[in-house]
Image (cartoon, rainbow, N blue to C red; front, side):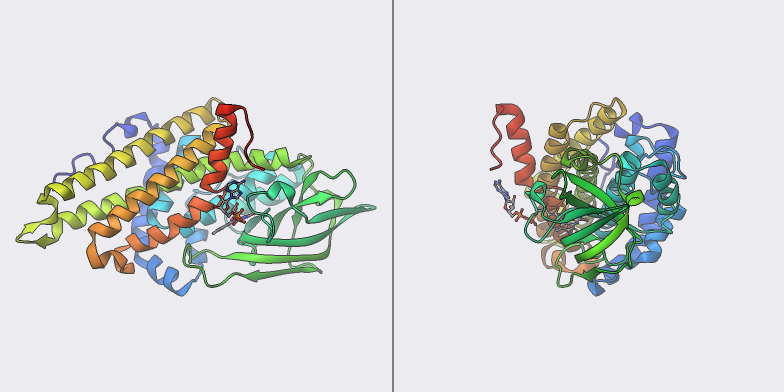
Amino acid sequence: IGRSRGTDYFGIGEELTAEERDYWNRARHFVDDEVLPVINEAWEEAEFPRALAERMGELGLVGDGIVGYGCPPMSPMAVGLVHMELNRGDGSLGTFLGVQAGLAMQSIAMLGSQEQKEQWLPRMARVEALGAFALTEPEHGSDSVSLETTARREGEEWVLDGRKKWIGNGSIADVVVVWARDTGDGQVKGFLVEPPTPGWTAEKMTGKGSLRAVWQAEITLDGVRVPEANRLPGAGSFKDTARVLAGTRNAVAWGALGHATAAYDIAITYAGERTQFGRPLASFQIVQERLVRMLAEVCSMQLYCLRLARLIEQERLTDTIAAIAKMNNTRRAREVLAEARDLLGGNGILLDFHVMRHMADIEALHTYEGTETIQTLIVGRDITGIGAFA
Ligand code: FAD
């Protein structure tokens, strides 16, 4: 089958610098040579492949564009390409990167003190220390702004009480950014908790049908004490938490592109090889039409991502733009994956063919970092001037 351009029909590759191309190649080889051969087993066994996460650190893929502090020098485009490639391989590793770099490291880089940055960022970039970001609670997901975990000041310490749910790396992290409401001024603040510590319990969540190769935890904080030096000085209200999330929504848009690219690659290869009625599937008009629609969706997602990178370079990314991109790309990726699953017939549901894993995993991307509906409401507020959240 002629696949002269792969999925790059709009010349995205021509937009890249040599350094960006290098990040892309490094991530691509890592995925093809080290991730794809082992990931289905990890997914099936619900094992977190920590050695692969550490390799990402060794390969200099973890840093999210943070400048200095031992982080690899990555442009917004390089950050996006790495997210895309990892998710093309596997959503669990992509999610690990999102939590480690996009959420935990960025919280420290954007809102932390000099000492906090020096203490944590170099080790986290090398994946010698694992990070987590604990915002969601059992009773507050989409309305995390109403979180109930409290932080009470006692002299030079803070006492944290509450519960968290869905916290990526939560049971294995060396440092967890915990968001809690200051009982003094009522504002949401961020604290670096270093487990194990008295009053902290983190239980790995089980029974997931999506992102099985990365772990989330339910966490209970029962009088957990942290020194004032562990409070993020730049986190004064929920607005600061939201600033961290705008960046990670950009990463999810790139990740969704990776999932859709995998779906298209797998489907077009399969359609060329599988013969029915004496002809390859790819020779049927209906199959071609479906493959072309998939490609068109992938290309439109690429164009969103290209512009996201450029807008971040120019410091022009807004909540609304990040929300449109996250909403659009996860929705498109779901559609492309459903097409690919169908084009593989029965094999489409076998893990060996990879599509089913991506199809299950995209469901989590569609929900986390703010559901599709919540992204829609963010955009709806912008275009109408009317908030429709509550
Ligand atoms: P709910 O908020 O209960 O939403 C349920 C449904 O109601 C959704 O369809 C939603 O769109 C809809 N809905 C809600 N409000 C409205 C409204 N006003 N109007 C219309 N519809 C509405 N959180 C962290 O803090 N750290 C993490 O590391 C983390 N990792 C995660 C990993 C995974 C795999 C998953 C699944 C979640 C993770 N989360 C994490 C939590 C995630 O951000 C939340 O699941 C998400 O924000 C949705 O919250 P919820 O699950 O409570 O759903």
